[in-house]
Image (cartoon, rainbow over all chains, first blue to last red; front, side, top):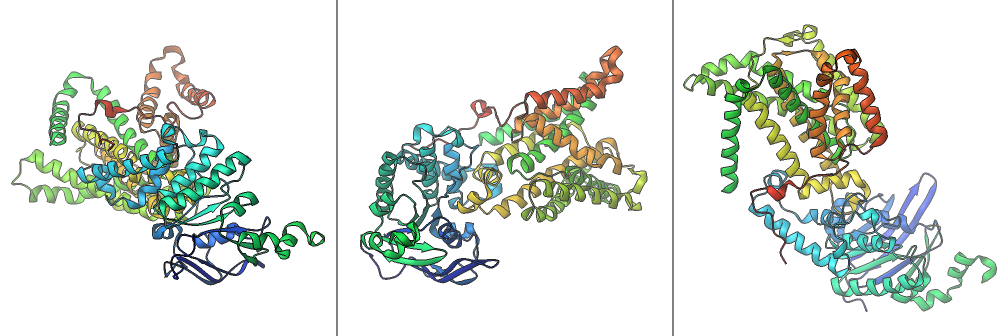
Length: 261
Length: 329
């Protein structure tokens, strides 16, 4: 899908972060346009997840600026950034393990609730209507992911693949415009990876999302991303279409070492 | 409307219990009922902080002390004047109205302390938070020990005996109902998410700071109410009642009942209040009752580390007279 608008949805300008003497991410630039599906790749320790943590407010950038829909995100707390319409999944799945599948997704709906603390204790008409509305919403969402029959199961008891799906469903429940997926195909077999590719493409179209994903599975990245950024030691070493990245000598060097070029 | 009718019904029932229960059962059992109920309020409110929100607090006795002492100060020093001011009301009503104010005052002052203690909880977790809350409880106790106006080391005596079965039963029911309703709401799920995974909760749009502090404030409020009931029941408050051992007693209750299970907290609070009393009747081994009590706890923890009920909650809503929120199809 070509960029539908010239205004970037997310824009990182010369963003850097230092941990002590280590420059984990150095002058990172990124423009994401509405509807794009962009991949972020790089060898282990390249700083990919750090970029996610910068965008979602877990870390504050030492330098540079992050804008989402034209608003500066810098200095906002992670929950405020999520409320702006930016949701993420985690590399090592972070579900609410002891809670049911249903509750996991309902928690992500919480930011849309209007009822106050007292209102939710009193459980008046307004609250019950709201609860019914959100319940319908999450049921539809779980149904889309084929998780509806499991909605009363404890999340940590699900098979790995289902947990990944649930994490995506949970992120979608916050009604994001931009979805950040951190290694969605980790631990999946080739069959599951292919299904996941279809799923990601499908949710992008269904929910009209912009997606930025980190992935090690080259088949997945090359298969679905329209644009790819390659990070190595915190520096962007290449950016372009999948075919260009595949042939880029710098990328091959970063992954396979100098002799391979 | 139905809800209002049920409330009125329960109100009348509680009034009847208040009037006739002491005539039917022995005063010793009334005493045990009162202590059980106070412990239920303490356990259920601590469960919100420790079990549901996962913030390990060891300062519940401190909240209870603040609630007890501030409400007693209110009724002791201001109470007589207030009752005079309300002399147009029947004496019973005036007295209970003053007590209602004391309950609110006790609860609110404990809640303010909860707010102050909640703030370090933003930075600390686990063992470190436990130490801070433990320290807070001790600071409260030592402060009370040194204020002569409220009895100091001698204890605060002469507190009017306002705690009646009516207040005990209705406030216990109110605490259980409020905390259960809160836990089963959208906000309750937010508390749970803080316990489960703070980073994921933040990423899902939950203001974890707000929920941690709120858990402390709400939990402390009810502990303050329990302190108020306790003081106006015994008519005496002593700093030694609020050492960290009292906090541990409440912790034991919620762990035995199952962290996160309100039903478990209620049952465990009753069992652990009655058990030491019941063991008095063991005849020849009655000198060993505290040993038996401790051994019972150890055996329980070895065989059921998740507590009696784990996180299990019976679904009382099946018998709840109000319409359940129907999921829209």
